[in-house]
Length: 393
Image (cartoon, one colour):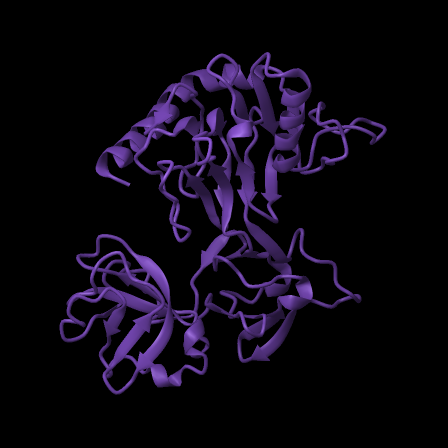
């Protein structure tokens, strides 16, 4: 993404926040074509904002069903009016990525809008509730998904819950994100300078994937499964950070080989920390996932695990806005607003030039103007409003 692309995206989002604040209330007051609610049912019509008294009709339960209903309506009747989906308050746990393609486009005259129901706050979550509200029902009375492991650490069999390898590793305890087992430990009082190691002796000249460490401060020989360990590194002049798994460790020369290149060279004073190493699980709030065994280990931050909600991310990207490269078609005049998202990478846009495929490792909006009049949700934008007259370049 070039500088102009980044600037345009920021301008579009800022405009959406400012202008939409003025117009949002009136827009939400209008009737919707379809409704989504946590007490809905995808076999219903989706035309009612709440279940009827007989329990035979009401809102949909998922955004995926609402998207499909709009697709069906466009095929049957064509797009003859603006279409709107209102989402009731509550948390919606996505089991898979919600994908929008060119077939989900509106037009300049008849846009398609997904937004929050007036006065309510829907939240999209890419997580799976392990215990707590919406957690799995125990097989027998009193049984929990958690079993004592050692000391303050508990373990959970993810495979028994039908959870496979996690595309993105995040864990929330009663709504608060918890740190993975890491070294050095997190220092909340010194977030920018504490809790980091630094590339040793100038690093490996010109390398983006070989990280030289100080053996006096880091001992990788302690790790039983080093290839499950990840490095969260801030390369070059701390311009950004990237999380990369480890493939090999040269303990004689004190060099960690990363599975892929960082964005920039790993030069002197590049800061980093180690995460998802079981042997580093040594502080309250920390957790570790053994993808090979399908086991989650967790040291709760308090003594209320049995009465608390634990959510772990299971969806890599909650929303994927795709283009059709063969037809040079993009998603246009489709917008979302007043929806909050958490627990996973929230939006991946497969926009790009017809000959350029987006990187699978990170969301990107390429420089070509192929995603038009789309206002996306991301994990960090909490949109309180909506505007449709915007083009992302």
